[in-house]
Image (cartoon, rainbow, N blue to C red; front, side, top):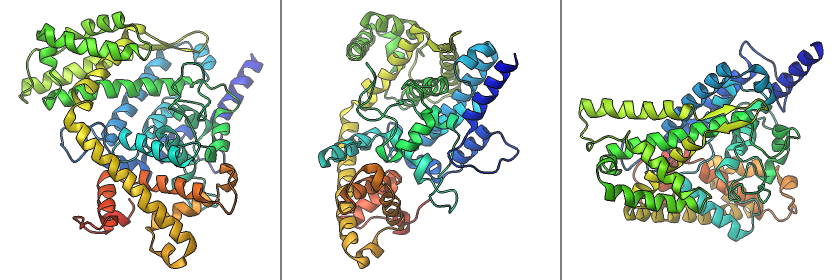
Amino acid sequence: MATVRKGKANAAAQRAQRLRNEPADYRSPAQRDRDRVLYSGAFRRLGGVTQVVATSETLLVHNRLTHTLKVAQVARRLAEKIVSATDPNHLTAAGGVDPDVVETAALAHDLGHPPFGHIAEEELQHILDERGLTDGFEGNAQSFRIVTKLAIRTVATPSPALNLTRASLRAILKYPWMRGQAPGTAPANKWAAYDTEAADYAFAMNGSSNVASAEARIMDWADDIAYAVHDVQDFYRAGLIPLDRLRRHSLEAEQFIAAAAGFLATKGLDAEKCHTAFLGLQALLPQEAYTGSITDRAAMHAFASGLITRFADGISITPKGAIREVEAQRYELEVLKQLTWYYVINRPALATLQRGERLVVRGLFNVLMNWATSAAESTREERTLPGQFRQLLTVIRNDTEALNVKSDDDEQLRMRATVDYISSLTETQAIKLHDRLHGAQAEGSALDVWLRI
């Protein structure tokens, strides 16, 4: 028995370890992690970043900050539910489940998303691939870079950033592998960390295999719930997703599920099970179009609450510590997510907007890269750079060894600093900076662009 207790104590100490030692306080290590993410500048920025539709388009929809807050709430409640309902030995076999760790991971999971969301993420990936930066750009890897290197909390050198515990860092890693090392059928276009953060990644993994931890899986399930439920709720209220017609009109329903099942089949899901999942959800859909009445609003809240409760029962921990998903609920989640793609993301109007957003991102990258190159050759030019960009160029110079580049060939360093800077902007800042750098008279003060939140 004493040996078992010692083993558990050692495991807890490993989970609570930080890469850099620091004094403790009255909070648990995981509670301190949660607070650090919540108070970071990168977290505040999410209020100006797209979830699906640009924050400037309508006030009806979630932005990346409100989405993150709901993911964190669902993730914490899921973790608490699992802890209360699971044999402690099963939790130990899973490596531990701490609701504060799961909530920390949820609060941090989108920190690295650039302005304009996934469109900008794709464009930055294309740009860096074209220019030969081998570990490219990926939103999850950028989030990990922020919490381990870019976030500012003290003036210590080297910067400890948020200095999160091993448990929290591991829980952030939804895709725990480096680029090009995705196992089996895992998505090759997702990865956990850049080469510059290889040491932090190794610390977080602590010799573990490239399988997401139980806490990361709980956070990911909560993210799927929030994305599926709240985006559908938003766009039904906005009149874009016709939930009432999907319930009442068989032709509308047939056209949607045929398209959704066809797409999901390309991702390895069974088309027939997709149809079954949709039929299970169809009876829950509202029967009338949304008008904004008190009755409609109450019904919409009940609809969302019922779905969240339904999906909260979709995961559990096995005696061997593995996360088990209920297949039927996984299929229902995937079908719900397809509603937003089918009715919103693939609409021509949004495609037009996204084309413009890609041009803004590429234009920013090209001008900032040229500016950084000139600054490397001229002290005067360096002084004219935006202050935050100048600081990021200093940070990235410390990564020469990690990037394995020659000291006299720092183009790769400038590329990484440039995408760090672009990723730190809100959408309004990105558009204003793009306009000013291309000779247009942007509305508002230049301070909106140059000052950092």
